Image 1 (cartoon, helix red, strand yellow):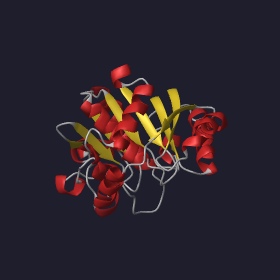
Image 2 (cartoon, rainbow, N blue to C red):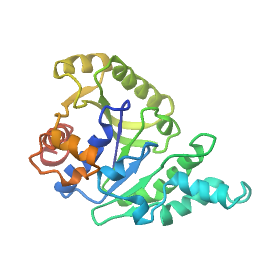
Image 3 (cartoon, rainbow, N blue to C red):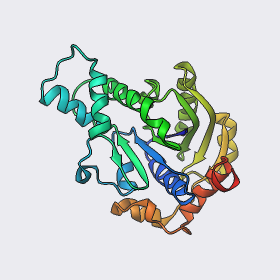
Image 4 (tube, rainbow, N blue to C red):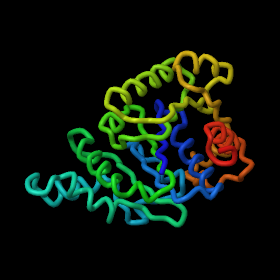
Amino acid sequence: MKTLVTMGRGGTGKTSFVALQTKYFLDQNETPLLLIDLDPDQNLAEMVGVDLEREGVKTIAELVTETFIKKGGTMTGIAPAERIESRVLVDGLYEGERFDLIAVGTKWIEGCYCMPDAALKGALSSLAKTYRYVLVDSPAGLEHLNRKVTASVSDLFDVLGPSHKSFLHVKRADRIAREVGIAFDRFFVVGGCLFPQELGARAEEETGREYLGKITFDPLVQESVIAGRSLLDLPVDSPGYLSVCALMEKAGYGKSG
């Protein structure tokens, strides 16, 4: 089992990248896959054609609200995170024909994401080992990474936008991963579709991490995202998809791996 975590500042295209990674592995028959959406915006499900509400699947944040707010659950006895953990596997896991998906979701109550993160961490400890790949869409704030939702990562991908703050984000993520003891094999930087091609060398120099290349701007991807269509339905010759295929092959996955 390999865990691939993708992060980056908002608007860089990281969720689209995770969706296209998913398409790449599916097209290569590299399954089973588990997708984890840690971003409160929870866009990943839509980008891979899943309507969680229609499927009757709850986000972890919704399960926390139902258990401890609406039903008045107590904080004594069984640890709260363990109580939610059992519900994640029953009510919070979308099980599809080609991949499964869990979303942390948007938390509508006060406090941090500590309990949802702890529940997810516990569920993943037993669940993740049954998959070939676990693909994680992590928000820019890195709070979930900081709480070690997954303590062992195969590869980190940081998607860069056209700003110096993206370079700083890579350094911050690198520091957090090391300070909280997250083990990872490799750390790559990827240029988002708006990242200037000519800054590739600078990206590697300033971040100290291998620059794989950039995602090609693709009107088909843009139209699909705006319309809420699944990126898994893109044609195989879509420029944006082909660029992600090349990036994944350069990272050692699939055809050249």
